[in-house]
Amino acid sequence: MSFSVVIPARYASTRLPGKPLADIAGKPMIRHVYERAAESDASRIVIATDDERIRSVCAEFGAETVMTSPDHASGTDRLEEVARQLGFGADHCVVNVQGDEPLLPASLINQVAANLAEHPDASIATLCEAIADPASVFNPNVVKVVFDHRGMAHYFSRAPIPWARDVWAAGTLPDELPPSVGYYRHIGIYGYRVKLLQDFVTWPPAPTELTESLEQLRALYHGARIHVAEAGERPPAGVDTEADLERVRAWFESVSTR
Image (cartoon, rainbow, N blue to C red; front, side):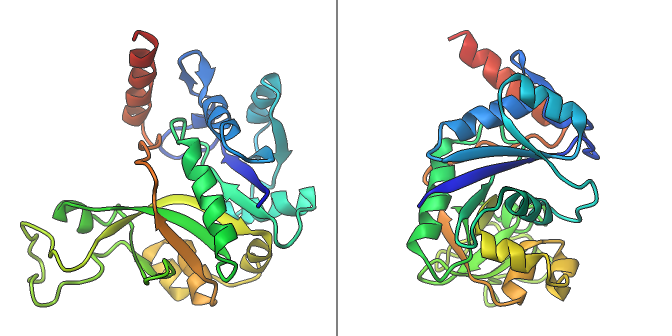
């Protein structure tokens, strides 16, 4: 399946304003993300932004950029505008790569696109990784996912799912996870069919989406199927805070001195 990568890049980050332009090893972060995407099998890579400063920097290193509305409520709305502006067909695959993932392996981009192609009954494909420690399962900032034997998602939640009724006592952090079932952290990389994007922007937010603050629950609520697979390799964490940025800078410095 031919696929495109779209990289949303907003300037107005709450915790780290101007994040896409932050310098990492002499390059703006958005360029590192673009270069990781260029290592994938994508037929086209587009940076979607609502800020002229980001567009100008991207032009300097030759990236295709689409200017989008600053009023989008979600990243999926921004992707739909890009697909509409570029005239992508309804069955075309768009992989959403976040603009704060300068270390994202290209293999995961390819994996998401391939999984969507292999499952024509799915409108979205995404990835997960196994969780081994109870603290992560009970951490509301770690999004958990439960899926069936074919990899189709049942539900995503900030709560510990599935709940081990006969093992766990409410309000108590267990020492270990039950061995009878796997626990999985959702990794926020998505492949979409354009038709799903077109439908998504017409759907009202779902009650579960508003309660959990998880956008993907809107798709499940309205009957779309989401394929989930374990990531072929462990993705490094993205950049959300100044501490994350310093960690990534240190990684690039360590690599350059080897």
